[in-house]
Length: 488
Image (cartoon, rainbow, N blue to C red; front, side, top):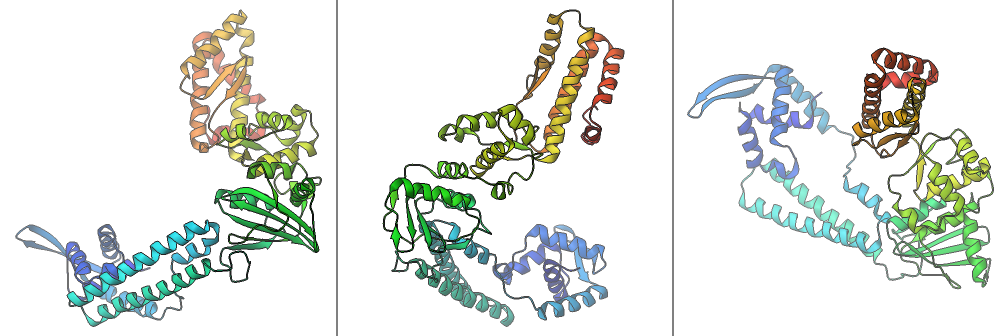
């Protein structure tokens, strides 16, 4: 199948045979690179492809600077060119540009930043038009090339008008009024969008504006200042809730809503009766998550008691959060290996309480669902290394010898984020490591452990211990051992 790069190269070679450098010069001379981007590497890639497929042939030409490879179009190349050119000119593809995606995401950016970027784009297009118009005056080019440049200029002018109109709408005069024409508005329903995700979107984008949530006659608002919750209000019909504690309680109650419409507008102002808030977005979400009292919402994040979680890469934020004692206890227990049932047992909590805490920790970015492949890899590594250590105990004459063995393994693996202490693995590997890199670390540790046992107990005993441990590894983990070649 011919690409557009292939078609361009074929079309230039139809005019006359050329070598690769000449094709590049023809593109520059015809100002083709203004409206069609193709690199020198792409030219030679197309030439090689067209030659391999028999659409062009090459001949050698000797000149003053040495031998050159001249390319010319074959009969097959002509047939394919005309068929592809007609298909392209008969295209039913609508006009699309990558910039459309940027406009679609415009309401995710703070309004001031969005306006700045639109102005930059307009300024760039104005300068680009000026340069093209100057080139059209200075350079003699073919009528079709001239038509392409004129089309590019006209399209750029339409884009300027389009972006100018968007800018004017963003700078509307009714800054305290929400209208259906407001482009800086997020709208939706809690059936499709979770409140924690919405608040995180506002906070991470450092947006300012008011979030209005309603269900029947009930309406509650949260006003943000550069991503920070600033104030809140609560209304039932025409009545405004005055008690500050009740207003805050009503806001936390939103986290239990599974239905309700919301609107966030960066140009709207605080509602009447707005109560000032003294907390950040993460604490707001955590407090709301603590109010959950049913599985319906929690199970979206914690689907079952067998679910596995691991700590997120950035955990320094935990010091800034006002975590409860049981939340910190669970956070220190999570390792990507223990399921919800195990975590609940170790934390001395019910599975519901544990799942609710996991939901809250997840929504503020402290934990994440564990990668199943990584979890199996960690599990089999921990199990194998610890069993090897314990299986060697009968062959040690003193407790001190056992410690010396562990110390020697740790010394040789000093550069690895893994240690073994009292026959237990201490694993400090980065949770963001790709599974292949994690396997490399574990493989190195197990190889070192086997080497140390061989030196101290002899090869026959070390190999026998390995085979014995293999029979005690869970059958479902044998495949992981082989997949990542942990024992090679």
